[in-house]
Length: 195
Image (cartoon, rainbow, N blue to C red; front, top):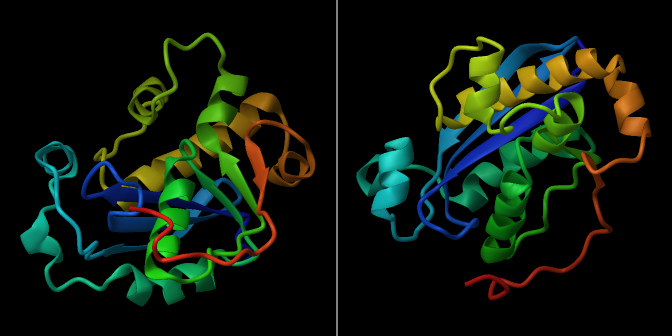
């Protein structure tokens, strides 16, 4: 089975994008989720009460979880050369930040689709384009702020937006637009690049 695109979502321990404490990756084919993977991640960082209240993940839950450099191999094996999506650019920035902090190369995906931008293009008259609002509008049930669940819903929103715009994923990936970002040339990273 061919995967059309992967959808990534992360939860963070604090205000810094690099403080990933959970990651979820959903694989989509033909507009349906066909596989999924998620992991808690020990960010080796402080947890803010606001973040813990949001997603329910705290220091004790991740104490024995793998670090970012330990889950990186799996993330890279799934996303390298692939079309990847997330709801807003936050998740892409988080992956880049976590890689920079760990002193490892960024994940070499092919193109990144911002499903929030795509939703704005497909349904410009909605009051907002938050993932929870879109899920409610399309009667998609899910538990918000769980990385794999958020990835699944963002992938379903992407499939619905393609249908609304009457284009295929291949046509989307071939077209210019704010919802597509090509991966830049590989560049060296510094472990001190991000606080």
